[in-house]
Length: 223
Image (cartoon, rainbow, N blue to C red; front, side, top):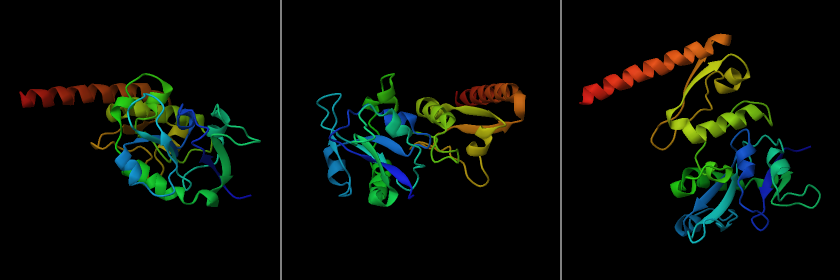
């Protein structure tokens, strides 16, 4: 059986962003675009008008990376407008059928500016307009742990210190030669370090104390 990835139908989507919220690998994301950004997008991009807030003039799309998706079905299972039998806002299709979405993904993620006014509210929908600072990890398909970790990076990732206890999170969090934690446009992102087993609380406290001492000295040096 070929790998399956989600196909988005803009005519059935209610733009709740739940699909992005539950994605363990950050391979499906809501994107709001100005008319100029939408006009410059690849021809294969599917778009619709942003429903809420009204009057923005933004276009909306759900960008899916067909080359990074693990095919776990989380997005389809949680989408309130998906029907496994008849199809809905999201339908799993063979990866090759969505090959043209790779270019769409690259454009949406790398060329479209983040719309900060859409990410200000404390709810699921708004949270997913923040850039995730954890993506494409080596976790198992459908892993819930990375969904939670990714969400935390969207809310606080530009100022996070992570004291990681040994376990699955040290396998997908820092495999040899790669790291799924990333940075925002200003180059800020989570600071990750691994501690051994149960002492990660003390380890994390040391990171916090050292950061406060450094920052306090930096401020005094600027005075």
